[in-house]
Image 1: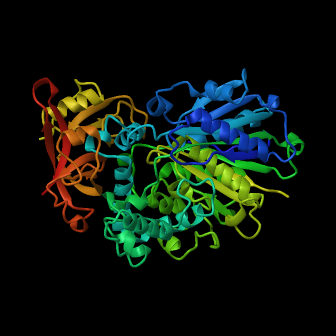
Image 2: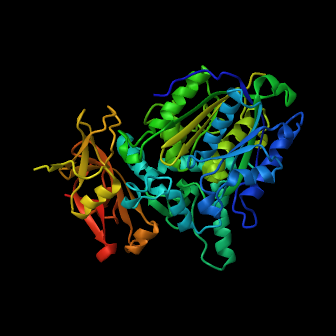
Length: 422
Length: 142
């Protein structure tokens, strides 16, 4: 069993940046990583000499499949001018970024390094959608899950079906999560789908009229989301707007030893909890309505940080599908089992709610370049905790935040807790 | 009667060979009696390393399911698409362990009528000819 030990040395995040997320035919993962690195360097309040960076960890799920390029880490290190430092690619499926962040934390906490770059990058849109689906499916148990015909939307749909049966949730409840995350993404200039669902729907109507086709007569977004032509079923009960998109993007954060953080900024964000846990294939769990690895990682991170779920002001959670956000909000202890979907319906997870979740727009609307997502979550909390989230800034003192990054259906989960002390 | 044998290794290949013989096999830990499907060579509860194959009763119930409209290539090759979707599910075996399987015999045109908890029995779906023939684990509604 995992043991909780305090970090032997304090770790602070002093810079954070991301590329725009989206579909970029002219950019590969290295181009996107360069963008995120430049955004990161710009965010370091006092500036810094990049030659101080001693090591780099980069989350990437499968550049081999997506770009036919393995061995990505030294290529990215070279692209940002950091040779000959050690550069290590870290793979934990869609949790690759969160796992890379933890590697960076450990490098500093252990005393092996004082300044570490953590990145995440994925270029997914060069493949056709069916090929992306198959590439992602390799994150599941290929021997025993895939022959059943499962896809990733299918796995989370099966979790949704079990949740609905256990707690009486309707699939309509999940739409609250999508609406909220699009509302947030509309205020995030780096989001892939930076529009509300209302705007999206109006765009569909305008496009139909422009093409001389009969305009759809959706009365409102609920009507749109219930309509198979607006929101087609992908894997019952999940529909298009329950799913995160296929994305290109990168993110980068700069970690330093706590005692030198003042050389970089007067407003560092301390990483006070860093945990990771592993889980089985989906079928090998006592329940389909919770992710055991997420619960273990959360409990470990909370204990390490000396905080409880109640203390967390905002969280970026792994909403690869809307049901995943509901389950995350329960696994992290924000809401009791079976209450997460009601909390979303009641607006508790909105930007002005009691427990804002995915102020960035989440994977759903900000985009999900899988290896980058866990690092991009840290970028959002860095901005929110320092009052730099512009139009989507959460009110009040965001002194404690959490990121939750899941690989596959929960075979990997990384949870980090962040603290601002001044 | 359940068949017990310790001859075959506890691998995916052996499990699939049993499927080709139209048998769903679990593995049982000799030390603590834990029962697993899919197979494992080491018991995750007691860490025992001696296992035995035991044929499952083939009875189970639906723990979770999905209807997939856009499947992987091998499912498309078997004739499934948007107009002919299929059901994938997780089945709780009578023995108490769970496994992923295709689910047959359900009306995919009425998704809301498919219920978690539906009783199922094991079925085997074959695809391909000769050397290329493959047997897939399935469960069908009773």
